[in-house]
Image (cartoon, rainbow, N blue to C red; front, side):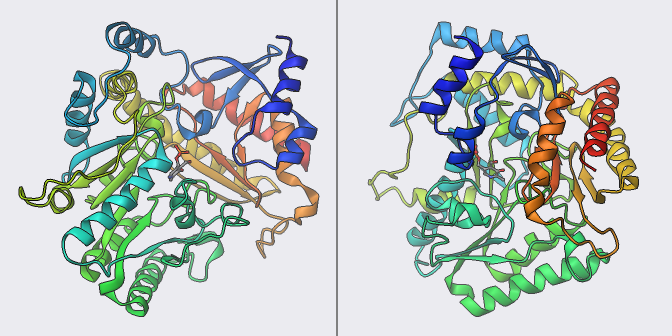
Length: 449
Ligand code: PLP
């Protein structure tokens, strides 16, 4: 198909996630065709530097032949095996064992999903089942953070606290609550890490006290909020929130869908602070986007509570046809090998200071008010006035103009609605790739001044 007929057919038939439908009909799609390393190529032959790893997922970069080989081998041997009932497959078992060996020690069991949204949805169902089965049916209230993103399932999008995910969807649900995000740049006491941590802990304690600890099931958070604008909390925040949950008798759920698999430095962000969650959700970097897969990892205590005693013969009615899909599992095993034996985790860690220096260097730019980052996850926040931190007027449509200028400069990153620019380069980025990224980014910012 020609470029124009593809775009026309897209306009007519393909519903895109998280977009204004009318604006998309008017603009038309950008059709991507191929990728290699840190670069993508569009249908018109333009080479684009991808500074967002697809959708913060292609952590190993494009064109990793060993992943293609692993998928081909598994597809040839056995393209599908259910894990329903008592069936299983070798890659699914190996991956479960491997993930448990790599995850925080509290997490002993894995349930595989197709992505992050159903990992969150599965976590909610497991938590509900667990408290009902262990004689605490009043524990139903769930707490998350403002600016949080936990996918767009019917339940998870209520834990998500971004307005577009609630508007016209009758969300959040009555049992879903939100606390202020640890957004240093925009919060009183933001310059004082200990005060920011204390404020988050106090907000959680107050919410649990208001709802009654016997009624609260869990607190959900991203170690670094991604879609809410890459909100990087101070070091120690995650541990303080985990400890508070333990004190308050509620479960702590770490949503590592973005932060997992080397994105922030270690394999999981929880590792950096020795945090052991009760449940952890992952997706994205698990297969690095080469096939859909997510997972929820749970503690043995939750597993045993759900499993109940041997006299209860009823099935636990939770499942998907493609849970633990063997091709996705074979891909994930190879992706994990690339992070470790393939040196990508180490490369991501070695390159992080260059990424940080590049972002911080742009604080000199007249548009940039804040730079924040950890590992290879980062953001710039653009402001109309650096002293007052005043935002640009939405009518200026700055994110759209920046995205268009970036594309002209053959660079892809995420321009959020509130003038936050998000970056998540692949762990395979070289020094030359970073030099290109910051040269193209500076040119882009200059053009929209
Ligand atoms: N949780 C977090 C923290 C995410 O960032 C996302 C997606 O970006 C999800 C959950 C949902 O994952 P998915 O888009 O794979 O359903």
